[in-house]
Amino acid sequence: MGRKILDRKTLERNLTAIAGMLVFSMGINFFIVPADLYNGGLMGISQVIRTLLVQYVHLFSGTTDIAGMINLILNIPLFFLAYMTIGKSFFTRTLICVVSQTIFLSILPIPSVPVVGDTLTAAIIGGIFGGCGIGISLQAGGSSGGMDIVGMYFTKKYKGFSVGKVSLLVNAVVYGVCAILFGVQTAVYSIIYSAVSTLMSDKTHTQNINTEVVIFTKKEPKEILDYIVKEFKRDATWWEAKGGYTESRTYMVIAVLSKYECAHLRKDLRMIDENAFVVAKDGMSINGKYEKHL
Image 1 (cartoon, rainbow, N blue to C red):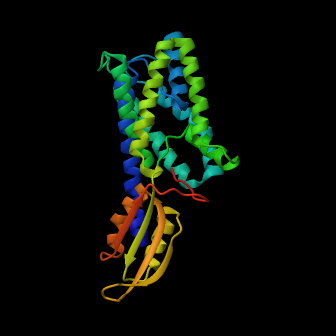
Image 2: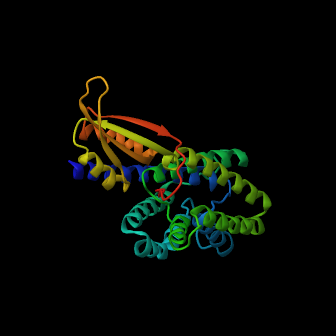
Image 3: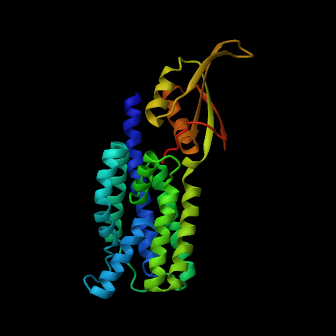
């Protein structure tokens, strides 16, 4: 039963991550590229290289954006870094997301005339699409590669480092180059797009919300404990209690999960014990060794 749940969940997560990359790519190709704006991170570097190749070297043209292919190529050494130092699971999720992102960016046609004429509006709408897409992929356990890999590597290697610090540094360089090569206005609108995208990603990605979960069950808690450990890589505590009215024996299982993990726990718990019920409290403040998951 437990293995069947995990296999089904893996498939659902992969498909959801791919769907998130589709939404992200729609935002890029339909709004950001026609407005001549740029992403942050490794994708932004890829877009700058793309523009230099198209406008100054005249190597590529047409409605196909080669930034996705450039991004894939730049990610190749980072894939090896992820596989060797971070873990096979993270490597697999990242590979699925980056490859699907490359395919979508290559096949989705770029409008010859911008869908939205106003650059600010295009930046906001593109940011909504892009941020929601990234958030959906992150919520499914995916990763868009690039600075996520670099950030995860430095976070594991150096105490006090974070993915956010790496992204902030790289984005500052990317938008500085944009200001020099393409003008301050392009850089400013690109920063607005990036800010909206980050906001929407945080709203969509509920891994950042800590939730205390208490499960009440009449069954022996071992299967629930095994599920939490294997599915979420979290620990849990249990103890035996007694019902106040019936005085029957009850087991309580307590764990701290993300809000996203809690939603999946509620769904899968019905397959383990359909009579169990869950009490959850969002926004828990946690001190000590608690690992946040992507």
